Image (cartoon, rainbow, N blue to C red; front, side, top):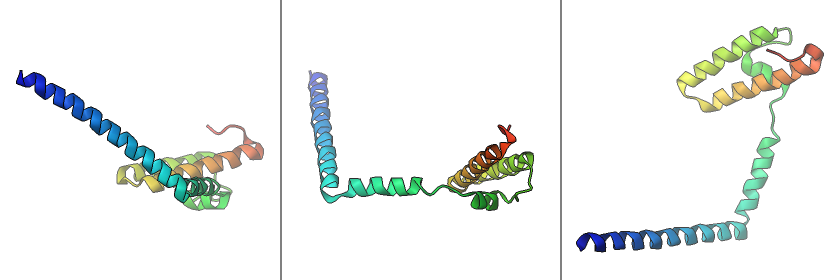
Amino acid sequence: MAGRILANLIVMGSGIIGRAVFQAYRQALANASKTGVAQEAMQNAVRKAGKAINEQEARQILGVTEQTSWEEILQKYDKLFENNAKAGSFYLQSKVLRAKECLEVVHRSKGNGTPS
């Protein structure tokens, strides 16, 4: 009998808590839209997406020049990417990845085909 009462209390309590969390979430969304926080967050996301790495910055990140071969660029990329994976710097690791992607686009646009 006591187990049944306890089970009913748990079920009813979780339902009440679930509704309260849902209402709090809806209220937070309403507050964000009233204050313009949601729009500001979207604008910031768009601004950040527009700040792509240019070729010069990509070459500085990887430490290569315009005369560096694609194989050397890949070696530098692999070394830097792995070093930052071990050290735990996700930010630097993502910068290295974006630099490689930028140089890959440049390499393709110069008519060198798809880099391997």
